Image (cartoon, rainbow, N blue to C red):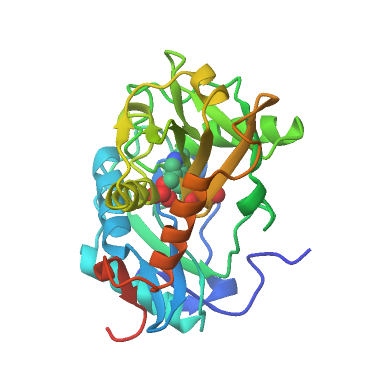
Amino acid sequence: MDKLSDRDGWIWQNGQLVPWREATVHVLTHTLHYGVGVFEGVRAYDTPAGPCIFRLDAHTRRLFNSAHILGLEIPYTPDEVSEAQKAVFAANGLREGYLRPMVHLGSEAMGLRAKDLSVNLIVAAWPWPNYMEPESREQGIRVRTSSYTRHHVNITMCKAKANGNYINSILALHEALDAGCDEALMLDNEGYVAEGTGENVFLVRDGVIHTPELTSCLDGITRDSVITLAEEAGYRIEERRITRDEVYIADEAFFTGTAAEVLPIRELDGRQIGSGTRGPVTEQLQTLYFDQVRGARDVHTDWLTPVSGS
Ligand code: PPE
């Protein structure tokens, strides 16, 4: 198997572009043991103006917010972190790909009481096509409600995209995959629909779009983009508590996320949703989204940051 760690290229590590295989950390890295770190998932797309990072400023801002929530002080300015993402994408000669900025604590000391550890930043970039089969964009995916509850708001912080939060996501996702589904739907501790393991969720009923309020899900940047595009297309959006059975009887449902993009859900817990394939509203929003990220629209041009031209 090709190993992600064994390839040519460059990774930005603490202010420098280092050769891909040499971008390593010590085994006593604090974050490796306890999960206190924060990260981002960002995509860049090929556009008529060359490769552009989608909503770079919003992702950088969320990285700083995540760090602030966990009490980590990133030793760079937001501009420097945005420039690092552009630099590493350009250095790897990519036209389209995924960027992964990640902030982790150093290996100066072990233990829960360790304080004043170094705060380190890496940014990697690689080609990462959507991890679902291409047909799933048209036909939708099969989803199962997770037996694992999404984070309670006072356990780990849902506004932080924190490394450790993803134990919950991975437990839920692997349970769904083992059951032959493509993704899990997670409910919050009161039983209301929260989100996917790495996506926000939407449903459509009688022409109105519904999505859970932000209390127990990540403040997704794709979610925000899709809400903006949907409102501009004339849809009403209701952010509110949603129950699992409302998804069963929705006309359409879909996930949004940087990695997942806009992905129709065709089935939840063995119940067909709507027509059992991508619905018209989902298709329209998908088209708007892909046109937007690929620079085919003349609105929201500030959402696209060219990789070169810094
Ligand atoms: N909820 C969760 C839990 C989540 O991890 C993501 C992103 C979202 C919602 C959507 O947020 P946004 O990307 O800003 O629209 N998940 C990232 C990690 C996925 C992975 O497989 O790793 C992503 O999509 O980059």
